[in-house]
Length: 103
Image (tube, rainbow, N blue to C red; front, side):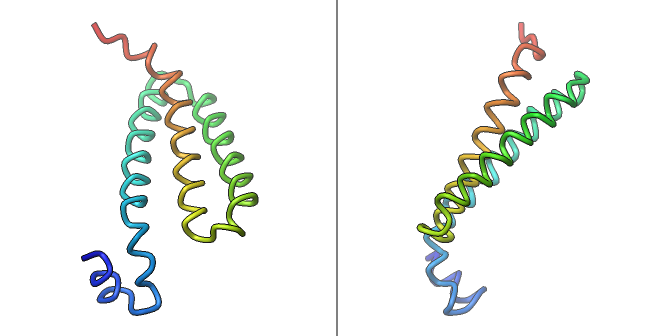
């Protein structure tokens, strides 16, 4: 039903983007998870680590987009964005887990 929804909302030129809908869901999920870990870092006073993580993820996205984007178009850019957000989440989580001290 994704095709009919894309047709209804965006028109016939965007019907092919319906196949990317699950990836956009994964993007939103990863972004929310990263934000949660980022808030832990912010509360712990680790703003520098947040900056470093964001900078590394941005650099990974730009490098991936330059390498993959032209060949795979929109789908490739969505996958690159997903990878960059996964990297951001991993970097945030690496620093945030010791701060949580779950007992």
